[in-house]
Image 1 (cartoon, rainbow, N blue to C red):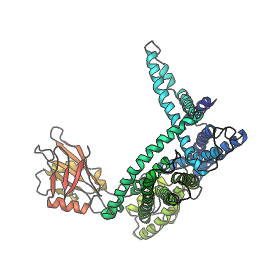
Image 2 (image 1 turned 60 degrees about the vertical axis):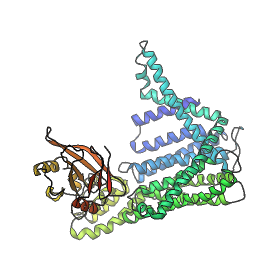
Image 3 (image 1 turned 180 degrees about the vertical axis):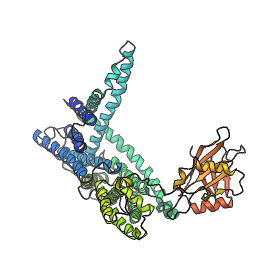
Image 4 (image 1 turned 30 degrees about the horizontal axis):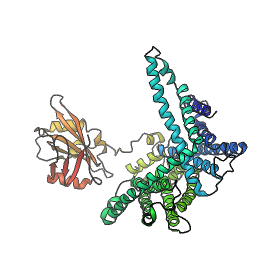
Amino acid sequence: MFPLSGAAYGLAFWYLSNYAPVDEYVLASLMTFVASIAFCSWFAIGVRNLRDDVLFAIGASLLAALQVLSFQIFVGLDYVTDIPTTGLLVCQAIWVGIAVAAWRIWARPQTTVLPNNRDRAALVPEIWSIKLSLAFGLLAIGILWPLLYAMTLLLELVGLDLIWDFIAEGYIAAPLSGVAFATGVLIAQEKGNLLIPVRQVIGVLFRVLYPIQACGLLVFLAVAVFGGWQILVAQEFGVWWTVMAAAAGLTYLLFGAVQAGEEPTLFGKIGDRIFRVTLWMAPVFAAIAIYTIWLRMADYGLTPSRIYAIWAALFMLFATIWLSVAAFGRRQSTPNALRQTFGQMAICFAMMAFVVHLPFIDPVTMSARSQKARLADKIAAEAPSSELSTPTLNDLSFMAGRLGDPGIAAIAEFQETYPDLVPELNALRDRNPNDRGEMIAVDRIPVFPENHQVPSALIDKLMTGPLEFYRRFCRDETGDNLCSVLLIDLDGDGAKEAVFFIDEDYAPVYRFGVDENEWTSVATLQLEGTQNDHAKLLRDLQEGAVDVVAPRYSDLKIGGRRWRQTR
């Protein structure tokens, strides 16, 4: 029956995704329910008595589906980015998965397969066992389809050449994949004792990787202290992803290192003393992430990605401090103390994953409120000029196309207050956020060196041809020009190539083909290091501080900074 349930769930997914028998408004929540009930039926049934297990499985699945439905009702899925929709589904998987793991460990078992252990430390290896069971399911799918393909190739030799086409049909392929996945999960569940050495191997591997990453992060912090901090905080939006990944990666390695084995120490007595010192690095990285998020939030307000970042960074900060306190305690061995703490952290993580998408405090709604408050002051300040600035229009476009129903409602209020100032909703959605307004004139773009010998007709042909699109992005907020062209022989053939610089960290390179009588793109240069400084670049071009570093459309060095070829 277990493999047949996989076929049924696979067929249900195929049918819902292809035919959508219900209104699209409830389709996402219905598919969430099917996925949750499949997971719960495989891992939560057979733990207590059948009635309790079924009630738990249905209750958890309904709760996940209702949370997705409430998100659709209050936010909508049509005009939001992939970040909140993906975050919504990932959070459902997190809290449902941890809830099932807790149900398996803390329930009163009907057999001797599962330990009746309410210790939160037991939650850590159980989470890993569930993850390994799912991995076995994916492995079974990965084995099934190459095997079926090889079999159909063999049968084609005797004239049966339509079998693969039949198997590849969705209504056949989905149930077959479901059967394979459920069979892999079943094998892992029935042979649960075999998962113990697998978890121990993972634990040993993570114990080897942990000090390696800890040394790398220590070097990072040392460089940041001695001058690298200014470079770090000067980075554009997204630096917190890197910093958070460092803290989360180090913590996850520790989560894997402590999940198997009953040794009294992790790295030996002396090694554990050094290890306890490394635990302060993850809270430091979490604090850096919070600071970098705050810098962007103070300037640009909240967005869904920043709200997820705030939740994750705060959780990592308090969780890693919690781990440090547990590791320095002397009431029990270091691995046992950490397992106990990780079990408590898993419960808190599941609660956070559930709370973050509750109505009215979900990332999209909170972002819309923040952007509405910020833009209300900006629009009021710009109203006397009878025209909104480009950054304000871009922010309104972001609200109209990426913040769902709350953003649409905020735009409607702005249009009611400023009917002649705020554009229509569709016009805002169609707006290119990188468009800086009217195309800049050709004669406003400087060409270096000033004494070049390239005919002006060819320069005009370049500006009105390949560069016509780029010229739309040459204006800054005040209308000044940001672009420039460098004519230089990059390949040593005596003909000049044109390097077009915009206010970005890349520069396209064009070559004029005499036979084709047109400019064609031949390479792209990528700036190494920090963000492009347009004013300094312009000064260096005027002073002629330009060197060809490598032959054949390769690298330039302008003012000591390298522009490396990427194509």
